[in-house]
Length: 65
Image 1 (tube, helix red, strand yellow):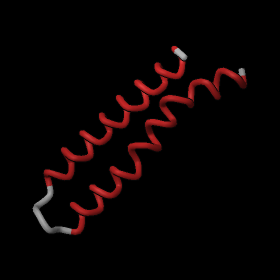
Image 2 (cartoon, one colour; image 1 turned 90 degrees about the vertical axis):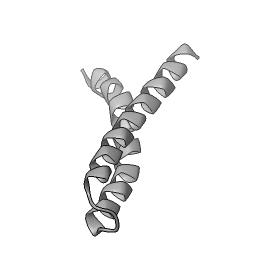
Image 3 (tube, helix red, strand yellow; image 1 turned 120 degrees about the vertical axis):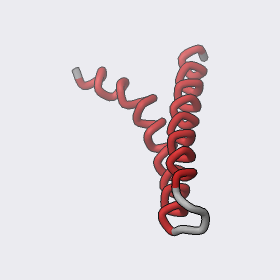
Image 4 (cartoon, helix red, strand yellow; image 1 turned 90 degrees about the horizontal axis):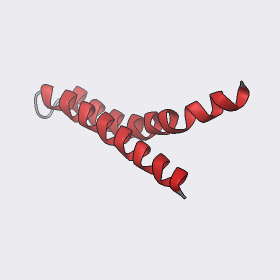
């Protein structure tokens, strides 16, 4: 159970960090422009993928060694 909680906390922390960076980049563009929309939707798609890879990627690498 402790391992699951650790993974959940790491996943959420990484996802929120990527979301914060994406929203920071989103705020740099003027309102109503296409790049602003692309950054917002890109962040929503990329954040869970990056969080998953950071959380579970090291376990896959350690199993193959």
